Image (cartoon, rainbow, N blue to C red; front, top):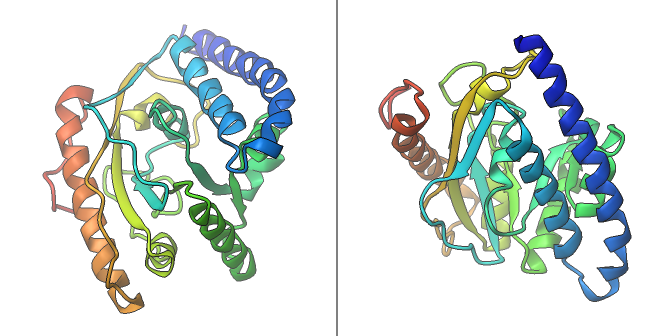
Length: 252
């Protein structure tokens, strides 16, 4: 039964993505008047929300009442599964996402990411990383928040992976705030290296912005730790609602 329902869920997701792209693509006519690509970006996020709502396995929502971040903000979150973007898209504001370049090569989904203004990066390639960070900085300069998973990839366990420097260097160099957020429950929604979905109650919640005013690159490690502590605490606050057993804030 799980296999049949999972096949249905993939079919539903594919049909929603295709239908959404057909709606999103004509919206490029707004680009001359919408330099931040808010319209095409929000259209893409709503595709993800729609697919999640129609998935028979998932119950996703936002916990609390998050305040819209300022435009000059680098948003960082823990990364549990490929279901994370669906969940985070429930947040009621637009931001541009840093994602693996390979995702942009997926038909329909990759095209929609490009139309939304998301930023591709090739793992392990220094030049690609520099180009991606420059693109993120340009979005920040336009008053558009950027979304980065500082772990770089999905964690296989409940423990957070080490944070990479990129998001925090970017924030300091751009004079941007860092906004931690956390997800919980998505690891069960779509386990890593599995095509089968699972019943999941997943939540996303948003923390308190961390100002980088007065910081230099020497403060990258301190900034990473401040963000990590918030994410751990935020995730722990969600666990009673998502049925996930985890460690207390600050424990590894």
